[in-house]
Length: 236
Image 1 (spheres, rainbow, N blue to C red):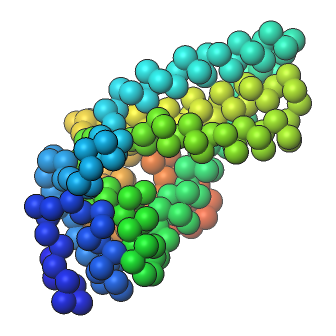
Image 2 (cartoon, rainbow, N blue to C red):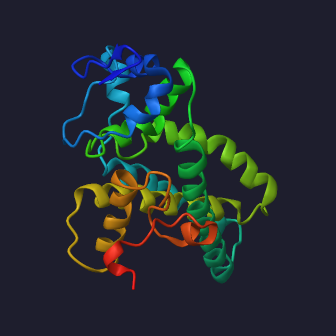
């Protein structure tokens, strides 16, 4: 835990320590600690509470809002077929955002105290403590803040009738993403797509941190050439 003469004390709140690692932060944060424990981030109890979210809070909070958004488009006169296609459009857009955010924001190369600190808060903590079940999904309060500018853009670009349904599709896809992400870390699939996705995501954590950015699918990794290499025993 020593980097550039600085030691991260895992028994103390971590967030305001990691910035002191400087250029060694990137190496430190990708040396995972395999424990289901949830390390303390902040000295302040309220801030600490805001960083912890149980997985089921995501569908509990956001599914009713998805339903309300779809209903709003229906009340505005949207046809069923058009609404269905609009929902699919929102779902598809989120898969691209999922990939892009993971690759270009969550895996940015921070430099300096505050950049290291911010990166640790938004994603570095997940790579350092990948089995921390209370920091796997995004806190609803933070999601709500991010939705406000996104909703402004959607309203600007899409027809009045279908804008709510499009946002609802994106939000539904986000719910699937967060719940899938939790399952890939804590579920125990033995075969099929879920087993393949779990192995794929674990490879991202433990073997190829610069590959395999997709969570719910490999689609955008295929498109943009960021698939992890195949295991040697599969190469003919």
